[in-house]
Image 1 (cartoon, helix red, strand yellow):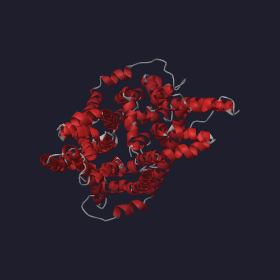
Image 2 (tube, chains in turn cyan, purple):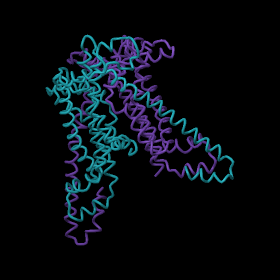
Image 3 (spheres, chains in turn purple, red):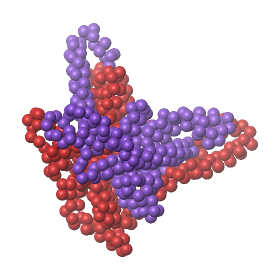
Image 4 (spheres, chains in turn cyan, yellow):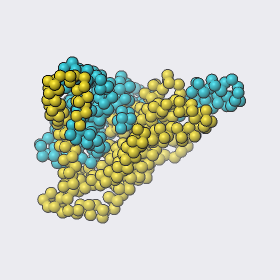
Length: 297
Length: 312
Protein backbone atom coordinates (compact mmCIF):
# COMPACT_ATOMS: atom_id res chain seq x y z
CA UNK A 1 0.00 0.00 0.00
CA UNK A 2 2.87 2.38 0.79
CA UNK A 3 4.24 1.72 -2.66
CA UNK A 4 1.06 3.11 -4.16
CA UNK A 5 1.06 6.29 -2.12
CA UNK A 6 4.71 7.06 -2.76
CA UNK A 7 4.13 6.64 -6.47
CA UNK A 8 1.30 9.16 -6.31
CA UNK A 9 3.23 11.70 -4.24
CA UNK A 10 5.33 13.38 -6.94
CA UNK A 11 2.18 15.26 -7.92
CA UNK A 12 1.79 13.87 -11.40
CA UNK A 13 -1.72 12.96 -10.35
CA UNK A 14 -3.41 15.66 -8.35
CA UNK A 15 -5.44 12.79 -6.89
CA UNK A 16 -2.67 12.32 -4.32
CA UNK A 17 -4.33 14.70 -1.90
CA UNK A 18 -7.70 12.98 -2.08
CA UNK A 19 -5.96 9.63 -1.62
CA UNK A 20 -4.45 10.93 1.56
CA UNK A 21 -7.84 12.11 2.72
CA UNK A 22 -9.35 8.78 1.77
CA UNK A 23 -6.84 6.99 3.96
CA UNK A 24 -7.52 9.26 6.87
CA UNK A 25 -11.22 8.73 6.51
CA UNK A 26 -10.61 4.96 6.36
CA UNK A 27 -8.67 5.15 9.63
CA UNK A 28 -11.39 7.12 11.34
CA UNK A 29 -14.14 4.79 10.23
CA UNK A 30 -11.99 1.79 11.20
CA UNK A 31 -11.34 3.03 14.72
CA UNK A 32 -14.93 4.14 15.27
CA UNK A 33 -16.25 0.73 14.15
CA UNK A 34 -13.74 -1.13 16.28
CA UNK A 35 -14.43 0.92 19.39
CA UNK A 36 -18.19 0.52 18.97
CA UNK A 37 -17.85 -3.22 18.37
CA UNK A 38 -15.56 -3.64 21.38
CA UNK A 39 -18.03 -1.85 23.64
CA UNK A 40 -20.90 -4.06 22.49
CA UNK A 41 -18.82 -7.25 22.51
CA UNK A 42 -17.38 -6.66 25.96
CA UNK A 43 -20.47 -5.20 27.64
CA UNK A 44 -22.07 -8.51 28.72
CA UNK A 45 -18.97 -9.96 30.43
CA UNK A 46 -18.24 -6.60 32.04
CA UNK A 47 -21.79 -6.32 33.28
CA UNK A 48 -21.59 -9.88 34.61
CA UNK A 49 -18.48 -8.87 36.50
CA UNK A 50 -20.15 -5.72 37.87
CA UNK A 51 -23.14 -7.74 39.06
CA UNK A 52 -20.92 -10.38 40.62
CA UNK A 53 -19.46 -7.72 42.92
CA UNK A 54 -22.87 -6.66 44.25
CA UNK A 55 -24.78 -7.89 47.28
CA UNK A 56 -28.31 -9.17 46.73
CA UNK A 57 -29.65 -6.04 48.43
CA UNK A 58 -27.84 -3.82 45.97
CA UNK A 59 -28.97 -5.89 43.00
CA UNK A 60 -32.58 -5.59 44.13
CA UNK A 61 -32.34 -1.85 44.69
CA UNK A 62 -33.82 -0.22 41.56
CA UNK A 63 -32.38 3.24 42.31
CA UNK A 64 -29.46 4.45 40.24
CA UNK A 65 -27.57 2.92 37.38
CA UNK A 66 -27.29 -0.86 37.31
CA UNK A 67 -23.91 -0.42 35.60
CA UNK A 68 -22.26 0.94 38.76
CA UNK A 69 -21.24 -0.79 41.97
CA UNK A 70 -21.61 1.17 45.16
CA UNK A 71 -20.40 -1.33 47.74
CA UNK A 72 -18.18 -3.85 45.98
CA UNK A 73 -17.87 -7.15 47.77
CA UNK A 74 -16.17 -10.45 47.03
CA UNK A 75 -18.71 -12.39 49.10
CA UNK A 76 -20.24 -14.05 46.03
CA UNK A 77 -16.87 -15.42 44.97
CA UNK A 78 -15.94 -16.50 48.51
CA UNK A 79 -19.32 -18.22 48.93
CA UNK A 80 -18.84 -20.19 45.73
CA UNK A 81 -15.22 -21.11 46.32
CA UNK A 82 -16.08 -22.54 49.73
CA UNK A 83 -19.16 -24.35 48.48
CA UNK A 84 -18.40 -28.08 48.07
CA UNK A 85 -21.06 -28.47 45.37
CA UNK A 86 -19.50 -25.77 43.23
CA UNK A 87 -16.01 -27.14 43.76
CA UNK A 88 -17.44 -30.52 42.81
CA UNK A 89 -18.58 -29.07 39.46
CA UNK A 90 -15.11 -27.69 38.95
CA UNK A 91 -13.54 -31.04 39.72
CA UNK A 92 -15.94 -32.89 37.42
CA UNK A 93 -15.22 -30.49 34.57
CA UNK A 94 -11.48 -30.81 35.10
CA UNK A 95 -11.63 -34.59 35.26
CA UNK A 96 -13.79 -34.94 32.17
CA UNK A 97 -11.83 -32.38 30.18
CA UNK A 98 -8.44 -33.93 30.93
CA UNK A 99 -9.66 -37.41 29.98
CA UNK A 100 -11.30 -36.16 26.79
CA UNK A 101 -8.31 -34.07 25.72
CA UNK A 102 -5.88 -36.95 26.21
CA UNK A 103 -8.17 -39.41 24.42
CA UNK A 104 -8.79 -37.00 21.58
CA UNK A 105 -5.17 -36.16 21.00
CA UNK A 106 -4.05 -39.79 21.01
CA UNK A 107 -6.84 -40.86 18.66
CA UNK A 108 -6.53 -37.96 16.27
CA UNK A 109 -2.74 -37.77 16.10
CA UNK A 110 -2.44 -41.46 15.28
CA UNK A 111 -5.26 -41.36 12.77
CA UNK A 112 -4.13 -38.13 11.15
CA UNK A 113 -0.61 -39.50 10.71
CA UNK A 114 -1.93 -42.64 9.08
CA UNK A 115 -4.31 -40.70 6.85
CA UNK A 116 -1.82 -38.02 5.84
CA UNK A 117 1.20 -40.23 5.18
CA UNK A 118 0.37 -43.93 4.90
CA UNK A 119 -1.98 -44.11 1.99
CA UNK A 120 -4.00 -47.29 2.21
CA UNK A 121 -7.21 -48.63 0.83
CA UNK A 122 -10.00 -46.19 1.63
CA UNK A 123 -7.78 -43.58 3.31
CA UNK A 124 -9.02 -40.82 1.02
CA UNK A 125 -12.65 -41.70 1.68
CA UNK A 126 -11.99 -41.87 5.40
CA UNK A 127 -10.41 -38.39 5.41
CA UNK A 128 -13.50 -37.02 3.68
CA UNK A 129 -15.63 -38.94 6.16
CA UNK A 130 -13.83 -37.27 9.06
CA UNK A 131 -14.64 -33.87 7.63
CA UNK A 132 -18.29 -34.78 7.07
CA UNK A 133 -18.57 -36.15 10.61
CA UNK A 134 -17.41 -32.79 11.87
CA UNK A 135 -20.44 -31.28 10.14
CA UNK A 136 -22.90 -33.46 12.08
CA UNK A 137 -24.20 -31.33 14.95
CA UNK A 138 -24.39 -32.85 18.42
CA UNK A 139 -28.05 -31.98 18.73
CA UNK A 140 -28.75 -34.52 16.01
CA UNK A 141 -27.14 -37.30 18.00
CA UNK A 142 -28.02 -36.67 21.61
CA UNK A 143 -31.26 -38.65 21.64
CA UNK A 144 -29.87 -41.92 20.22
CA UNK A 145 -26.75 -41.42 22.35
CA UNK A 146 -29.02 -40.99 25.36
CA UNK A 147 -30.41 -44.45 24.65
CA UNK A 148 -26.95 -45.93 24.02
CA UNK A 149 -25.36 -44.39 27.10
CA UNK A 150 -28.41 -45.48 29.09
CA UNK A 151 -28.00 -49.01 27.75
CA UNK A 152 -24.40 -49.03 28.98
CA UNK A 153 -25.59 -47.90 32.42
CA UNK A 154 -23.58 -44.69 32.20
CA UNK A 155 -26.43 -42.19 32.44
CA UNK A 156 -25.89 -39.66 35.19
CA UNK A 157 -22.20 -40.38 35.34
CA UNK A 158 -19.22 -38.24 34.40
CA UNK A 159 -17.74 -41.29 32.62
CA UNK A 160 -20.67 -41.35 30.24
CA UNK A 161 -19.68 -37.83 29.24
CA UNK A 162 -16.06 -38.89 28.72
CA UNK A 163 -17.42 -41.53 26.36
CA UNK A 164 -19.51 -39.18 24.22
CA UNK A 165 -17.46 -35.95 24.17
CA UNK A 166 -14.99 -37.35 21.60
CA UNK A 167 -17.78 -37.02 19.02
CA UNK A 168 -17.39 -33.26 19.46
CA UNK A 169 -13.60 -33.10 19.41
CA UNK A 170 -12.11 -36.01 17.44
CA UNK A 171 -13.36 -35.17 13.91
CA UNK A 172 -12.18 -31.58 13.94
CA UNK A 173 -8.85 -32.33 15.64
CA UNK A 174 -8.12 -35.15 13.20
CA UNK A 175 -9.04 -32.90 10.32
CA UNK A 176 -6.69 -30.08 11.27
CA UNK A 177 -3.92 -32.53 12.18
CA UNK A 178 -4.19 -34.09 8.71
CA UNK A 179 -3.67 -30.60 7.33
CA UNK A 180 -0.64 -29.95 9.50
CA UNK A 181 0.94 -33.33 8.83
CA UNK A 182 0.34 -33.06 5.10
CA UNK A 183 2.23 -29.75 5.05
CA UNK A 184 5.41 -31.40 6.37
CA UNK A 185 7.81 -31.93 3.44
CA UNK A 186 8.10 -35.53 2.23
CA UNK A 187 11.92 -35.27 2.25
CA UNK A 188 11.85 -35.38 6.04
CA UNK A 189 10.21 -38.80 6.23
CA UNK A 190 12.33 -40.13 3.38
CA UNK A 191 15.41 -39.12 5.33
CA UNK A 192 14.03 -40.84 8.40
CA UNK A 193 13.24 -44.00 6.41
CA UNK A 194 16.77 -44.09 5.04
CA UNK A 195 18.10 -43.76 8.58
CA UNK A 196 16.07 -46.84 9.40
CA UNK A 197 13.33 -45.30 11.49
CA UNK A 198 10.07 -47.21 11.77
CA UNK A 199 6.69 -45.56 11.49
CA UNK A 200 6.25 -45.05 15.21
CA UNK A 201 9.67 -43.39 15.51
CA UNK A 202 8.89 -41.27 12.52
CA UNK A 203 5.72 -40.04 14.21
CA UNK A 204 7.24 -39.34 17.61
CA UNK A 205 10.66 -38.07 16.50
CA UNK A 206 9.68 -36.05 13.46
CA UNK A 207 6.00 -35.43 12.94
CA UNK A 208 4.98 -34.54 16.47
CA UNK A 209 7.86 -32.09 17.09
CA UNK A 210 7.50 -30.45 13.67
CA UNK A 211 3.71 -30.18 13.87
CA UNK A 212 3.78 -28.95 17.47
CA UNK A 213 1.89 -25.71 16.70
CA UNK A 214 -0.88 -27.80 15.15
CA UNK A 215 -0.94 -30.13 18.12
CA UNK A 216 -1.19 -27.21 20.52
CA UNK A 217 -3.99 -25.69 18.44
CA UNK A 218 -5.88 -29.00 18.39
CA UNK A 219 -5.39 -29.47 22.14
CA UNK A 220 -6.75 -26.00 22.83
CA UNK A 221 -9.73 -26.76 20.62
CA UNK A 222 -10.43 -30.05 22.41
CA UNK A 223 -10.06 -28.32 25.75
CA UNK A 224 -12.42 -25.43 25.02
CA UNK A 225 -15.02 -27.65 23.40
CA UNK A 226 -15.18 -30.17 26.20
CA UNK A 227 -15.13 -27.43 28.83
CA UNK A 228 -18.02 -25.61 27.15
CA UNK A 229 -20.09 -28.68 26.16
CA UNK A 230 -23.68 -28.18 27.18
CA UNK A 231 -26.12 -30.40 25.30
CA UNK A 232 -24.69 -33.74 26.41
CA UNK A 233 -24.36 -32.96 30.13
CA UNK A 234 -27.83 -31.40 30.15
CA UNK A 235 -29.28 -34.56 28.65
CA UNK A 236 -27.23 -37.23 30.42
CA UNK A 237 -26.54 -35.89 33.91
CA UNK A 238 -29.24 -35.19 36.45
CA UNK A 239 -27.65 -35.08 39.90
CA UNK A 240 -25.34 -32.23 41.00
CA UNK A 241 -22.56 -34.56 42.17
CA UNK A 242 -21.84 -35.66 38.59
CA UNK A 243 -22.42 -32.33 36.84
CA UNK A 244 -19.69 -30.41 35.04
CA UNK A 245 -19.56 -26.63 35.46
CA UNK A 246 -21.67 -25.41 32.56
CA UNK A 247 -24.82 -27.27 33.44
CA UNK A 248 -24.04 -27.05 37.15
CA UNK A 249 -24.05 -23.26 37.09
CA UNK A 250 -27.07 -23.05 34.81
CA UNK A 251 -29.24 -25.55 36.65
CA UNK A 252 -28.38 -25.48 40.35
CA UNK A 253 -27.62 -21.80 40.83
CA UNK A 254 -30.63 -20.77 38.80
CA UNK A 255 -33.03 -23.28 40.29
CA UNK A 256 -33.13 -21.55 43.69
CA UNK A 257 -36.45 -19.87 44.46
CA UNK A 258 -35.10 -16.35 44.42
CA UNK A 259 -32.35 -15.73 41.93
CA UNK A 260 -29.17 -14.65 43.65
CA UNK A 261 -27.95 -12.77 40.59
CA UNK A 262 -24.59 -11.80 42.04
CA UNK A 263 -23.80 -15.39 42.78
CA UNK A 264 -25.02 -16.68 39.42
CA UNK A 265 -22.82 -14.16 37.60
CA UNK A 266 -19.84 -14.95 39.83
CA UNK A 267 -20.34 -18.65 39.13
CA UNK A 268 -20.59 -18.10 35.39
CA UNK A 269 -17.44 -15.98 35.35
CA UNK A 270 -15.48 -18.48 37.46
CA UNK A 271 -16.60 -21.27 35.14
CA UNK A 272 -15.49 -19.25 32.12
CA UNK A 273 -12.06 -18.46 33.58
CA UNK A 274 -10.06 -21.51 32.38
CA UNK A 275 -10.85 -21.09 28.67
CA UNK A 276 -10.32 -17.34 28.93
CA UNK A 277 -6.91 -17.85 30.58
CA UNK A 278 -5.89 -20.37 27.92
CA UNK A 279 -7.03 -17.90 25.29
CA UNK A 280 -5.15 -15.00 26.88
CA UNK A 281 -1.85 -16.87 26.91
CA UNK A 282 -2.15 -18.88 23.71
CA UNK A 283 -4.17 -16.54 21.52
CA UNK A 284 -2.15 -17.19 18.37
CA UNK A 285 -2.47 -20.95 18.64
CA UNK A 286 -6.14 -20.57 19.45
CA UNK A 287 -6.74 -18.51 16.33
CA UNK A 288 -4.58 -20.83 14.23
CA UNK A 289 -6.75 -23.76 15.30
CA UNK A 290 -9.90 -21.82 14.58
CA UNK A 291 -8.93 -20.81 11.07
CA UNK A 292 -7.14 -24.04 10.13
CA UNK A 293 -10.40 -25.91 9.57
CA UNK A 294 -11.52 -23.65 6.77
CA UNK A 295 -8.28 -22.64 5.14
CA UNK A 296 -7.13 -26.21 4.83
CA UNK A 297 -10.53 -27.28 3.47
CA UNK B 1 -1.47 -46.77 -4.25
CA UNK B 2 2.04 -47.52 -2.99
CA UNK B 3 3.23 -44.17 -4.30
CA UNK B 4 4.54 -43.09 -0.92
CA UNK B 5 6.56 -46.14 -0.22
CA UNK B 6 7.93 -46.66 -3.71
CA UNK B 7 9.26 -43.11 -3.78
CA UNK B 8 11.97 -44.33 -1.46
CA UNK B 9 12.92 -47.23 -3.68
CA UNK B 10 15.09 -45.36 -6.21
CA UNK B 11 17.26 -43.94 -3.43
CA UNK B 12 17.84 -47.02 -1.34
CA UNK B 13 16.87 -49.93 -3.60
CA UNK B 14 20.19 -50.46 -5.37
CA UNK B 15 20.59 -54.04 -4.22
CA UNK B 16 17.72 -56.47 -4.65
CA UNK B 17 17.81 -57.60 -1.00
CA UNK B 18 16.87 -54.15 0.20
CA UNK B 19 13.94 -54.00 -2.19
CA UNK B 20 12.58 -57.17 -0.66
CA UNK B 21 12.73 -55.84 2.87
CA UNK B 22 11.21 -52.59 1.71
CA UNK B 23 8.38 -54.48 0.12
CA UNK B 24 7.73 -56.27 3.37
CA UNK B 25 7.85 -52.90 5.07
CA UNK B 26 5.20 -51.58 2.69
CA UNK B 27 3.10 -54.63 3.23
CA UNK B 28 3.28 -54.09 6.96
CA UNK B 29 2.50 -50.44 6.50
CA UNK B 30 -1.15 -51.00 5.70
CA UNK B 31 -1.61 -53.07 8.83
CA UNK B 32 0.05 -50.39 10.94
CA UNK B 33 -2.05 -47.72 9.29
CA UNK B 34 -5.17 -49.71 9.96
CA UNK B 35 -4.24 -50.11 13.63
CA UNK B 36 -3.57 -46.41 13.90
CA UNK B 37 -6.95 -45.47 12.48
CA UNK B 38 -8.91 -48.06 14.46
CA UNK B 39 -9.67 -45.74 17.43
CA UNK B 40 -10.90 -43.11 14.99
CA UNK B 41 -13.07 -45.67 13.23
CA UNK B 42 -14.52 -46.73 16.57
CA UNK B 43 -15.39 -43.13 17.45
CA UNK B 44 -16.87 -42.33 14.06
CA UNK B 45 -18.60 -45.66 13.62
CA UNK B 46 -19.74 -46.26 17.18
CA UNK B 47 -20.54 -42.76 18.31
CA UNK B 48 -21.63 -41.00 15.12
CA UNK B 49 -22.65 -43.38 12.34
CA UNK B 50 -24.31 -46.00 14.52
CA UNK B 51 -26.29 -43.46 16.59
CA UNK B 52 -27.38 -41.75 13.38
CA UNK B 53 -28.75 -45.05 12.03
CA UNK B 54 -30.18 -45.87 15.43
CA UNK B 55 -31.98 -42.50 15.45
CA UNK B 56 -33.72 -43.44 12.21
CA UNK B 57 -34.80 -46.75 13.72
CA UNK B 58 -35.88 -45.07 16.96
CA UNK B 59 -38.02 -42.55 15.12
CA UNK B 60 -40.17 -45.35 13.70
CA UNK B 61 -41.17 -46.71 17.11
CA UNK B 62 -44.13 -45.84 19.26
CA UNK B 63 -43.81 -44.02 22.54
CA UNK B 64 -43.23 -47.13 24.64
CA UNK B 65 -40.81 -48.42 22.01
CA UNK B 66 -42.73 -51.68 21.70
CA UNK B 67 -44.10 -51.35 18.23
CA UNK B 68 -42.94 -50.14 14.87
CA UNK B 69 -45.29 -47.44 13.59
CA UNK B 70 -43.37 -46.51 10.43
CA UNK B 71 -43.60 -42.84 9.68
CA UNK B 72 -46.27 -42.31 12.35
CA UNK B 73 -44.15 -39.94 14.43
CA UNK B 74 -43.42 -37.73 11.45
CA UNK B 75 -47.10 -37.64 10.51
CA UNK B 76 -48.11 -36.66 14.01
CA UNK B 77 -45.44 -33.98 14.15
CA UNK B 78 -46.41 -32.47 10.82
CA UNK B 79 -50.01 -32.28 12.03
CA UNK B 80 -49.20 -30.12 15.02
CA UNK B 81 -49.04 -26.38 14.78
CA UNK B 82 -46.20 -26.18 17.30
CA UNK B 83 -43.93 -28.23 15.10
CA UNK B 84 -44.55 -26.09 12.04
CA UNK B 85 -43.76 -23.13 14.24
CA UNK B 86 -40.50 -24.86 15.24
CA UNK B 87 -39.55 -25.40 11.60
CA UNK B 88 -40.18 -21.77 10.72
CA UNK B 89 -38.54 -20.48 13.84
CA UNK B 90 -35.39 -22.57 13.24
CA UNK B 91 -35.08 -21.49 9.62
CA UNK B 92 -35.71 -17.81 10.26
CA UNK B 93 -33.41 -17.87 13.27
CA UNK B 94 -30.56 -19.56 11.42
CA UNK B 95 -30.80 -17.49 8.23
CA UNK B 96 -31.12 -14.11 9.98
CA UNK B 97 -28.44 -14.83 12.55
CA UNK B 98 -25.94 -16.16 10.02
CA UNK B 99 -26.55 -13.26 7.67
CA UNK B 100 -26.04 -10.74 10.46
CA UNK B 101 -22.94 -12.53 11.73
CA UNK B 102 -21.46 -12.69 8.24
CA UNK B 103 -22.06 -9.00 7.54
CA UNK B 104 -20.79 -7.79 10.92
CA UNK B 105 -17.81 -10.13 10.75
CA UNK B 106 -16.98 -9.00 7.23
CA UNK B 107 -17.22 -5.35 8.19
CA UNK B 108 -15.05 -5.73 11.29
CA UNK B 109 -12.47 -7.86 9.48
CA UNK B 110 -12.09 -5.11 6.89
CA UNK B 111 -11.79 -2.41 9.49
CA UNK B 112 -9.26 -4.49 11.38
CA UNK B 113 -7.31 -5.03 8.19
CA UNK B 114 -7.26 -1.26 7.55
CA UNK B 115 -5.53 -0.24 10.76
CA UNK B 116 -1.74 -0.55 11.17
CA UNK B 117 -0.58 -4.13 11.79
CA UNK B 118 0.91 -3.20 15.15
CA UNK B 119 -2.46 -2.47 16.72
CA UNK B 120 -4.35 -5.35 15.10
CA UNK B 121 -3.38 -7.95 17.69
CA UNK B 122 -4.79 -5.99 20.59
CA UNK B 123 -8.13 -5.29 18.88
CA UNK B 124 -8.42 -8.81 17.61
CA UNK B 125 -7.81 -10.12 21.12
CA UNK B 126 -10.58 -7.97 22.54
CA UNK B 127 -13.09 -8.65 19.79
CA UNK B 128 -12.76 -12.41 20.06
CA UNK B 129 -13.79 -12.52 23.72
CA UNK B 130 -17.49 -13.36 23.10
CA UNK B 131 -16.38 -16.45 21.18
CA UNK B 132 -14.11 -17.62 23.98
CA UNK B 133 -16.61 -17.63 26.85
CA UNK B 134 -18.70 -20.84 26.84
CA UNK B 135 -22.02 -19.72 25.31
CA UNK B 136 -24.16 -21.30 28.01
CA UNK B 137 -22.44 -19.07 30.57
CA UNK B 138 -22.35 -15.81 28.63
CA UNK B 139 -26.02 -16.31 27.81
CA UNK B 140 -26.67 -16.25 31.55
CA UNK B 141 -25.25 -12.74 31.51
CA UNK B 142 -27.53 -11.76 28.65
CA UNK B 143 -30.47 -13.31 30.44
CA UNK B 144 -29.78 -11.07 33.38
CA UNK B 145 -29.39 -8.06 31.11
CA UNK B 146 -32.82 -8.86 29.65
CA UNK B 147 -34.43 -9.34 33.07
CA UNK B 148 -37.88 -7.68 33.00
CA UNK B 149 -37.54 -5.64 36.19
CA UNK B 150 -33.81 -4.89 36.32
CA UNK B 151 -32.87 -4.87 32.64
CA UNK B 152 -29.65 -2.92 32.25
CA UNK B 153 -30.26 -2.61 28.52
CA UNK B 154 -33.62 -0.99 29.15
CA UNK B 155 -31.88 1.34 31.58
CA UNK B 156 -29.58 2.51 28.80
CA UNK B 157 -32.51 2.78 26.36
CA UNK B 158 -34.46 4.86 28.87
CA UNK B 159 -31.59 7.35 29.11
CA UNK B 160 -32.10 8.01 25.40
CA UNK B 161 -35.86 8.27 26.01
CA UNK B 162 -36.57 4.97 24.29
CA UNK B 163 -39.34 3.04 26.07
CA UNK B 164 -38.47 -0.23 27.82
CA UNK B 165 -38.59 -3.34 25.68
CA UNK B 166 -40.20 -6.57 26.96
CA UNK B 167 -37.15 -8.57 25.81
CA UNK B 168 -38.10 -12.08 26.79
CA UNK B 169 -41.76 -11.56 27.66
CA UNK B 170 -43.18 -11.10 24.19
CA UNK B 171 -42.74 -13.71 21.46
CA UNK B 172 -41.30 -11.51 18.71
CA UNK B 173 -38.96 -9.68 21.03
CA UNK B 174 -37.86 -12.98 22.49
CA UNK B 175 -37.01 -14.13 18.97
CA UNK B 176 -35.05 -10.95 18.39
CA UNK B 177 -33.22 -11.44 21.69
CA UNK B 178 -32.19 -14.97 20.81
CA UNK B 179 -30.87 -13.78 17.47
CA UNK B 180 -29.03 -10.88 19.11
CA UNK B 181 -27.24 -13.14 21.55
CA UNK B 182 -26.36 -15.59 18.81
CA UNK B 183 -24.97 -12.82 16.62
CA UNK B 184 -22.98 -11.45 19.55
CA UNK B 185 -21.49 -14.86 20.14
CA UNK B 186 -20.80 -15.81 16.52
CA UNK B 187 -19.74 -12.58 14.79
CA UNK B 188 -16.16 -12.74 16.16
CA UNK B 189 -15.73 -16.16 14.55
CA UNK B 190 -16.63 -14.75 11.14
CA UNK B 191 -14.36 -11.79 11.78
CA UNK B 192 -11.37 -14.02 12.50
CA UNK B 193 -12.02 -16.24 9.50
CA UNK B 194 -12.39 -13.29 7.13
CA UNK B 195 -9.35 -11.59 8.56
CA UNK B 196 -7.28 -14.71 7.90
CA UNK B 197 -8.68 -14.79 4.36
CA UNK B 198 -7.99 -11.08 3.79
CA UNK B 199 -4.40 -11.55 4.86
CA UNK B 200 -3.98 -14.35 2.36
CA UNK B 201 -4.91 -12.15 -0.62
CA UNK B 202 -1.61 -11.18 -2.30
CA UNK B 203 -0.84 -7.46 -2.03
CA UNK B 204 0.22 -7.36 -5.71
CA UNK B 205 -3.36 -7.95 -6.79
CA UNK B 206 -4.45 -4.76 -5.04
CA UNK B 207 -1.50 -2.89 -6.49
CA UNK B 208 -2.41 -4.10 -9.96
CA UNK B 209 -6.01 -3.06 -9.37
CA UNK B 210 -4.90 0.35 -8.12
CA UNK B 211 -2.76 0.89 -11.23
CA UNK B 212 -5.74 -0.02 -13.38
CA UNK B 213 -7.63 2.68 -11.51
CA UNK B 214 -10.05 0.48 -9.62
CA UNK B 215 -12.17 2.18 -6.97
CA UNK B 216 -12.55 0.76 -3.46
CA UNK B 217 -15.84 -0.90 -4.34
CA UNK B 218 -14.37 -2.42 -7.50
CA UNK B 219 -11.37 -3.75 -5.56
CA UNK B 220 -13.76 -5.40 -3.14
CA UNK B 221 -15.97 -6.78 -5.92
CA UNK B 222 -13.28 -8.04 -8.31
CA UNK B 223 -10.29 -8.82 -6.08
CA UNK B 224 -11.25 -9.46 -2.47
CA UNK B 225 -14.53 -11.35 -2.88
CA UNK B 226 -13.37 -13.82 -5.57
CA UNK B 227 -10.24 -14.58 -3.53
CA UNK B 228 -12.31 -15.18 -0.41
CA UNK B 229 -15.16 -17.14 -1.98
CA UNK B 230 -14.13 -20.51 -0.59
CA UNK B 231 -13.54 -19.30 2.95
CA UNK B 232 -16.78 -17.36 2.92
CA UNK B 233 -18.79 -20.39 1.85
CA UNK B 234 -17.08 -22.77 4.29
CA UNK B 235 -17.55 -20.33 7.15
CA UNK B 236 -21.19 -19.78 6.27
CA UNK B 237 -21.68 -23.55 6.09
CA UNK B 238 -20.10 -24.18 9.51
CA UNK B 239 -22.00 -21.36 11.07
CA UNK B 240 -25.32 -22.25 9.49
CA UNK B 241 -25.07 -25.80 10.78
CA UNK B 242 -24.10 -24.73 14.28
CA UNK B 243 -26.75 -22.02 14.38
CA UNK B 244 -29.46 -24.21 12.96
CA UNK B 245 -28.69 -26.89 15.53
CA UNK B 246 -28.17 -24.40 18.36
CA UNK B 247 -29.29 -25.49 21.76
CA UNK B 248 -27.60 -23.64 24.61
CA UNK B 249 -28.63 -20.06 23.82
CA UNK B 250 -32.32 -20.83 23.39
CA UNK B 251 -32.29 -23.18 26.39
CA UNK B 252 -30.78 -20.64 28.77
CA UNK B 253 -32.46 -17.51 27.43
CA UNK B 254 -36.07 -18.51 26.85
CA UNK B 255 -36.22 -22.28 27.29
CA UNK B 256 -38.62 -22.26 24.36
CA UNK B 257 -41.02 -19.81 25.96
CA UNK B 258 -43.10 -17.71 25.97
CA UNK B 259 -45.78 -20.34 25.18
CA UNK B 260 -43.38 -22.58 23.18
CA UNK B 261 -42.99 -19.82 20.60
CA UNK B 262 -39.20 -19.64 20.44
CA UNK B 263 -38.38 -23.35 20.26
CA UNK B 264 -35.86 -24.46 17.65
CA UNK B 265 -35.32 -28.07 16.55
CA UNK B 266 -32.77 -28.86 19.24
CA UNK B 267 -34.69 -27.47 22.21
CA UNK B 268 -37.95 -28.95 20.99
CA UNK B 269 -36.34 -32.36 20.48
CA UNK B 270 -34.97 -32.11 24.00
CA UNK B 271 -38.35 -31.22 25.44
CA UNK B 272 -40.23 -33.93 23.58
CA UNK B 273 -37.59 -36.62 23.75
CA UNK B 274 -36.02 -36.27 27.16
CA UNK B 275 -38.18 -34.08 29.38
CA UNK B 276 -41.52 -35.58 28.27
CA UNK B 277 -39.94 -38.99 27.81
CA UNK B 278 -41.13 -39.63 24.25
CA UNK B 279 -37.73 -40.72 22.94
CA UNK B 280 -38.88 -41.86 19.46
CA UNK B 281 -40.70 -38.63 18.71
CA UNK B 282 -37.75 -36.59 19.99
CA UNK B 283 -35.50 -38.53 17.64
CA UNK B 284 -37.94 -37.75 14.81
CA UNK B 285 -37.77 -34.02 15.62
CA UNK B 286 -33.98 -33.89 15.54
CA UNK B 287 -33.85 -36.02 12.38
CA UNK B 288 -35.78 -33.26 10.61
CA UNK B 289 -32.60 -31.20 10.73
CA UNK B 290 -30.69 -33.72 8.69
CA UNK B 291 -32.12 -33.35 5.16
CA UNK B 292 -32.11 -29.56 5.42
CA UNK B 293 -28.47 -29.50 6.49
CA UNK B 294 -27.40 -32.23 4.06
CA UNK B 295 -28.80 -30.42 1.02
CA UNK B 296 -27.13 -27.21 2.01
CA UNK B 297 -23.80 -28.86 2.82
CA UNK B 298 -23.91 -30.70 -0.51
CA UNK B 299 -24.23 -27.55 -2.59
CA UNK B 300 -21.65 -25.57 -0.63
CA UNK B 301 -19.05 -28.34 -0.65
CA UNK B 302 -19.62 -29.05 -4.33
CA UNK B 303 -19.02 -25.38 -5.10
CA UNK B 304 -15.86 -25.36 -3.01
CA UNK B 305 -14.36 -28.49 -4.57
CA UNK B 306 -15.22 -27.25 -8.05
CA UNK B 307 -13.44 -23.95 -7.44
CA UNK B 308 -10.44 -25.66 -5.86
CA UNK B 309 -10.12 -27.89 -8.92
CA UNK B 310 -10.36 -24.92 -11.29
CA UNK B 311 -7.56 -23.17 -9.43
CA UNK B 312 -5.22 -26.10 -9.82
